[in-house]
Image 1 (tube, rainbow, N blue to C red):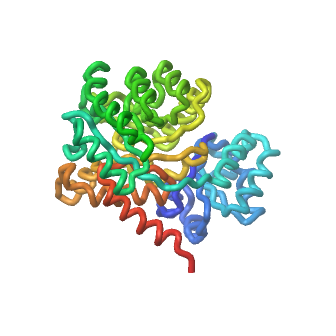
Image 2 (image 1 turned 90 degrees about the vertical axis):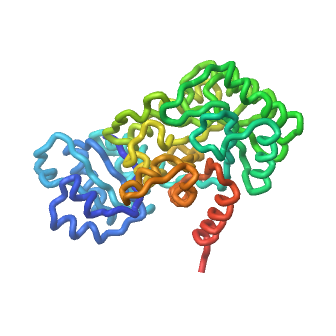
Image 3 (image 1 turned 180 degrees about the vertical axis):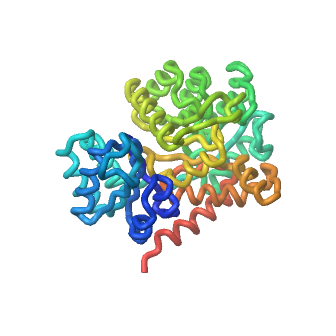
Length: 386
């Protein structure tokens, strides 16, 4: 039995129909607007009947398929609808129940008070010639000048990368990566730019990571999600924050027919394993990145953005990085249009704003000035009280 939090702004009728709720039941339940909406996968009959009665007893609701009361199927999916007070009561009730409901209660408890983090913009500097967006490529003094511009435009974090991880890219080797990023890292260190912003190194190589951390960098941005033990040791040695990103496959082939039975649960399970690994090495400060475009179909990317708040149950900040990515073009192709990376700023702003609405607090982007304005306006509207 597995559970994940859904965005309440969905077509509830369609969801209930999908899990097999009868039409009269859908008509009744779709009118019940809830603060919390949970998808519970692979429940057994006994658990469902107990949870259903306990939910109803406190004014909440558990939507189940037809035939559940008679246990016609061994397992099925269900949808729990409740407000915060009801969730608190339900958690207490299920802690004393059988059929693994105690485990479910502990998982649900993590969602009662999800953390909130201040919003930060992370500007992107690519020290290579093959990054998918030409406007993000900078070298030497030009890179330093752009870093200063980004800081002045509102970036709190600057992410430096020496290799492309776009679909189809091939890693050039650690020596070439170091050759590309060393001049920029050295200039940041010598000019003490690390006193004006927090610097992140976008690398999965321990050698490159250590070079940056020795020179004022504070964040390790790892697209492999701590795959390397040596990398984890270096990050822990310097007390660095680590961005754990999910991807399926390698950049060379990750977009060749990726498939998920349930992308939310698969990414969640990945984060669980890698968080445990990070802690085992002594890494304390963690950021989670769902990896938009890294071995994902369009529908996977959209689901992760729509239901991003689910991942706050781990208690860590969430990073969104969809700047000018191809998912925007995939959406526009459905309208008979095509876009280049240079034409995708409007779509980027919408994706990132929605991700922030759904729990992201670090926005990794190429266009700092435009994001600063868009997100400040968004915050003003979101936080307005009558």
